Length: 131
Image 1 (cartoon, one colour):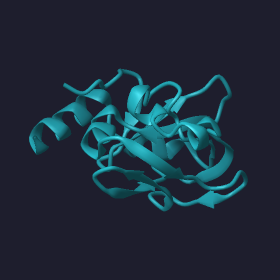
Image 2: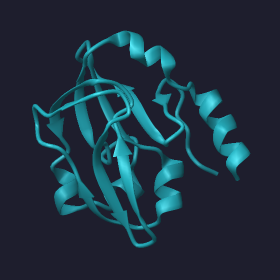
Image 3: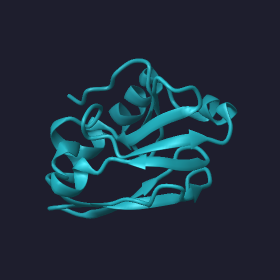
Image 4: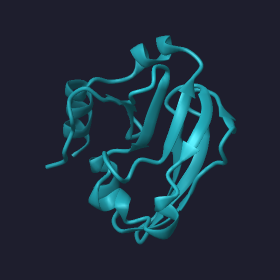
């Protein structure tokens, strides 16, 4: 069973958004369900700081033993920081997707886009239907 923490926002493409201690900034990564479906992550391609993305634009890619998958930005914003630890240890996405396995820190263009994302319960229903 996949871990789906309360208090995060989710996309149907299996990304999550987590609030940070800085207003208007969020962490984005892939969900526990997504990393489980991908298998062992061996490489992650992330954008550069200051890169700008629109809602659901591809911001990178994750390569796993089983497949390669695009990463989508759930909301529009500017990359403030990337998780450089993933360069040395991409498997952090497998072992701690909601902690050390985050991918980018994003400055939101608008908080309003967060309202279009899924709650933990809605995301849980989505993945239950796909199993």
